[in-house]
Image (tube, rainbow, N blue to C red; front, side, top):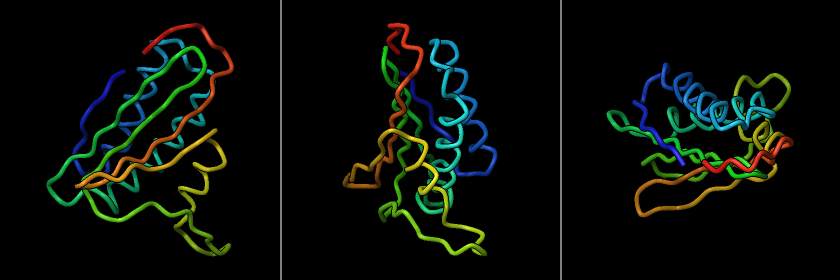
Length: 131
């Protein structure tokens, strides 16, 4: 398991994606990396835009075993993630819809302060590595 904190600013979305990518590549879990990167980008964007209050951080945690990868993104903001039903012309509202299609499972955990949004992706090249 590894985790890292990120500032509430746009470059942190890319940094979170790279953190997860580098970690999973090092651990030998890169077979579904494109799906994982997109899910991280979407959930980190939600944490930045709707979760972490100004001046606060959000945390990314990644773990892997021989069969699956789990990524968690925690912020200190209120509210719950909701899958939207955007219309064709809408510019926003597709992030969690994409996560629900790409991940094998996803959800959220309420905390006294904030929430954790998590997703799981099953690996197609299990190697027994534990992260």
